[in-house]
Length: 387
Ligand code: ADP
Image 1 (tube, rainbow, N blue to C red):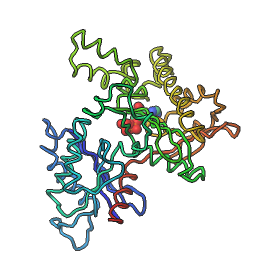
Image 2 (cartoon, helix red, strand yellow; image 1 turned 45 degrees about the horizontal axis):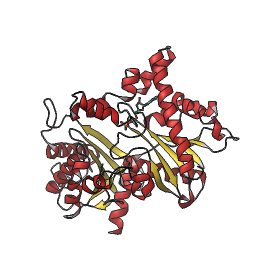
Image 3 (spheres, helix red, strand yellow; image 1 turned 90 degrees about the vertical axis):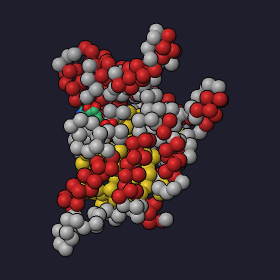
Image 4 (cartoon, rainbow, N blue to C red; image 1 turned 45 degrees about the vertical axis):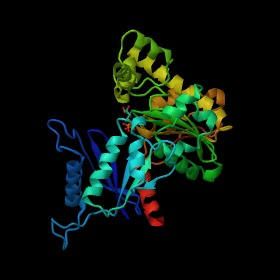
């Protein structure tokens, strides 16, 4: 089965055509600056038309079909949807009930869910019979126990505004924990581990019996680790203080979401640049990596307790998969847990799941490449096969 995976943002549309049986990507692309000057598309419908034309040109069958053929080179569409709220704990087939429910969650993810809905509607308009599936970033964390999801604040804030911890990157955490259990030959429903998804956005998840029992992102993706441009955990009184100093809510939002993290500490949110700067002896860059890896190591220590003793620690995503420097900074802080990095294995480059710890390490350190598109395509195909 072939599935088109769509990741619609407010001004961009990423698409990838997947062959689910082969587990491979056949074609991918991105349309940026939607509705903006110099952009290729005025709205999400135009962007989808453009994507479909490119897909057909690239992979459409050359034989009897003409260019105008209505035949699409895929049988279903899987959407990455950021917020599933408390309602969605699994991927769902889009129908007249689910789409408005996703739309209603927009206040919780104002930048993302409206764009996801635009993408879904644009496809429904063009190809009404094409099955569409929504795969939620929050869904995997629906298993968080109350002591992990609730904030210690008045209940009315939860009741009236849905303020609680939701967690994100769920598709990646779920995929990587499944791959890790397979790799270690442990049944998933007995697997206890810690997954560090370290990309531009970063989060760490505690996995117990194959389920998410805690995760570092909360009500929004701002909570938790130091990220490319996000601060992660700060004293909330800082926001109150800034408000009292005359900063607007929008300014505070921009400060913490777009101007903080590695960017604020080291002057760049690209780990490659920060690493190069540390090698050149740049003290700001060294301090930035020290602070960020220290905070991640603290979370790992805490999640070791949350899962009742992890059987593995897994690094994944852009930085987790590709930065031996950062992995070493983190691993060196975990020696109190008996964790030992193999420096040689850590330096090797590979796209395969692998061990980077020594045989006498208390638990294995793994690097497992994530593949959110693959996970979305598989979930989509699985749901369609059973419905
Ligand atoms: P996202 O999907 O959240 O945008 P990615 O998973 O692509 O992010 O990760 C982006 C991060 O990974 C950036 O900080 C980037 O610098 C870092 N990264 C990618 N490749 C390398 C590399 N070879 N060495 C060090 N860091 C890398």
